[in-house]
Image (cartoon, rainbow, N blue to C red; front, side):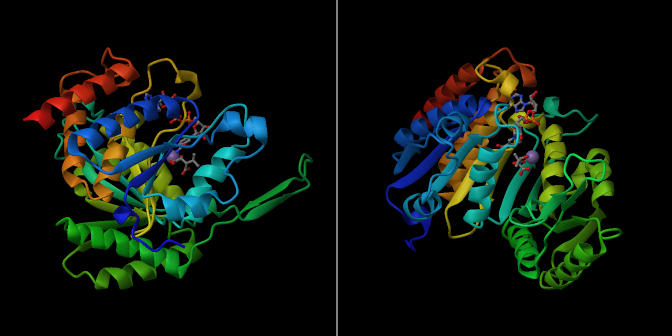
Length: 364
Ligand code: NAD
Ligand code: IPM
Ligand code: MN
């Protein structure tokens, strides 16, 4: 096992898994942006496309190849994913093997999802400014309802039974809570909100509540907030400005970050990072493969590009990351966007605009 911190590997090899549907369209643009950033800032990045997708799975029966996780762990600095999901694979087998396989297999326990409004014209809420919608979600990423524990019985009969278990460990809950508080301290935030459903899901809720009490006591300068997740959904629409950092379980984090994406202008803008500090991390837009839009030029590449910026930052290229984010903001302010944001451009034209902007700003 290679114990070098992935960001110190040279070159910084990035596994690029475009995936299915619009995953390919947005990854093409994120890759274009990364290649420009690499040459303008002379970064030691090496993009390595890996052809793991639905087509390959349908042809060969293989989703994540044997030894792939070890290879990613030892020989890459980061992983970039477009999106997975194909109607020809209705049980999502390849997507689960690859996406959840990487999240779980590399123990990427932090699903970091920033919710940031880049321009108030994109917000569906009345009277909200960019200052009002700027928070991050720490979604637990290796436990909860996603562990695939359960079973079924008497399938296809009127007596059919399905059991889908949730799993929460003391270790898993504590480490995501600490990650959220540590991030709050490091970024000058004053509040962390934990969200659960402890009023009704007593066993898991009790564990999350006790861990939250204990962990928050170690951070006396940070205000500990709590909302039940149903009330949180309402508060996110009613008064999103009250949130700085939200920490929650895997399933609730999945749901509230789609809600959060809507506050930013839609799924096309939302970005995420799957992190285990000191190990190889994985970056992906929040949206899925939207098969009906694949290859149409309608896919918004900005969520993928902001995910690439999160990756640059994680790899130690903060200045380049900031410039990429600024190029995204510029494209939105200039109206150079895809239709979902009200603009006239195709996926590729948005990518071209970002490249031009980056070249211009790099020359200053
Ligand atoms: P989706 O995110 O693919 O699309 C939902 C809708 O949101 C689209 O029809 C489109 O109107 C809009 N949208 C999403 N991304 C967009 C973009 N970049 N630009 C413009 N509009 C965009 O969600 P879905 O339809 O529920 O799922 C489709 C497939 O993707 C399913 O197989 C699902 O399981 C999978 N999925 C994968 C991921 C992932 O790979 N991380 C995430 C979510 C869903
Ligand atoms: C996401 C997606 C995934 C999830 C699916 C595709 C497994 O919705 O990344 O938000 O539920 O985590
Ligand atoms: Mn989701």
